[in-house]
Amino acid sequence: MAESQLSCLDEAHVNERVTEAQAAFYYCERRRAALEALLGDGGEQAYSERVKKERLRGFLSSPERQALRAAWSPYEDPAPPPPRGKAKAQAAEPSESLAYWPDRSDTEVPPLDLGWTDADSYRGVSRVAFFTHPPMEEKAPHLKQVVRQMIQEAQKVIAVVMDLFTDGDIFQDIVDAASKRRVPVYIILDEAGVKCFLEMCQGLELTDFRIRNIRVRSVTGVGFYMPMGKVKGTLSSKFLMVDGEKVATGSYRFTWSSSYIDRNLLLLLTGQNVEPFDVQFRELYAISDEVNLNQQLGLGGGVGMLGLNYSSTVARKLINPKYALVSGSRLPPGEMMRWAARQHREAGGNSEGQEEGSGGGGSARRLENFLNDLATLQQVLPPVESIPLGELSRKDGSVVSYLHLDLKAREALAQNVKREAAKGEATPTKEGRRFSSRLFSRQAKRPATPNGKTSPSPAKTSNCVIS
Picture 1: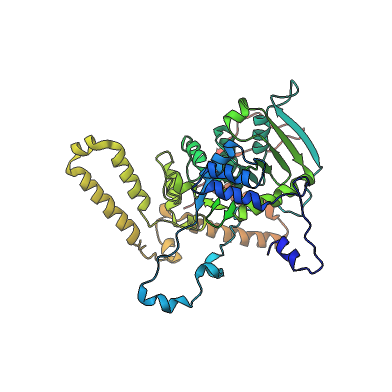
Picture 2: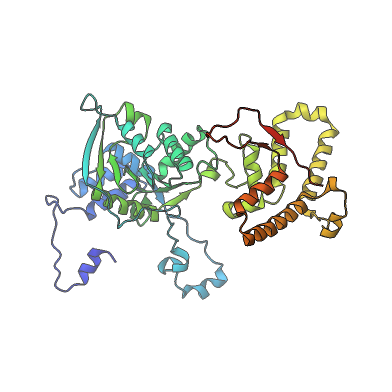
């Protein structure tokens, strides 16, 4: 129930008359009747007669009257009447319009699936900065610069509420933040401005990968409901929230005209001043409708729907089964190559297809056979038999396995170390050096002279071959 209905249930409540001179004056039944006359068949003439009859002041301007008539829409037509034979049987049943069906009317609240900032965290120092267009000071930044700098510095989340969004420069910064820095982006637009937003997106080189972290939704105004229909309202809020710590709000909208021609103002709020905007955005997001950019822009939305500008490395990664855990869903094996072959044939044109003749069909069949074999055949490795060490020792010395030689040398080294350590004649370090001299070529240095100087004679090289 509404608050006014609940207050009427209170026995101690007395309805006070609120006149037009009081600040609390909001709803007027006579004005509602005049609005119904305007939206009816009589139009503006019936509205003027109703205003004179009720002795009202004119509360609607000419542009408002035209906008209201354009935004008015009747309710959907009711279900067709039942056959005459069943009319009496269904007369006693209540109509669906008079009953509440939760399983039919309730809708699921859309989640902020890309993530959101912690509402309980500290938002920083509360400050307010004021910007205008044209700038009030000589060195003051213009409004578009303030907005773009906020977007380029975003690290956690970007939230936009705008009635009209057609500035490609600002949206390009948003796309870069979403694709390069993986910043979640949520955009809420007025339902009437979605068409202009999509036209702006079509002029940019967008792909599925670049807008993967962007969610776009639309809302309408509160509206005005009447027995014969309703008037659809619009979204007039304009603000940009970044990382849950900064908010830019005011009359500035993300359009070229608003940046260069119109007079606008912009407030930059930080700290705890951001909390009301956080709550307002989540409430708008909960009642909004989805705008699927992949579907509206014809991007496909699938993992395998790649354009010709992507490298073969990216394509191989998407085909590889081990990347299925990352992508979530994967097309059947070979579907990527089939799609690329179709794109190549379409890009070649009809002239090339006529020259190739039956060769194009043969290449298509060979590709299909290759992909079927790639997807169905299993690689069978031959068994590997181990070779006994005894057989290796009987072979010729020139083809002795390096592995066998290394193992045998290590065993001999271990035995010599134990023997010399027991006698106390040598250390393991010296023995290791003596044994390594027999395996590898090295320069033999002469012993140092008594006075500590080395001999100037050239060094000799000693080689040893083990058979």
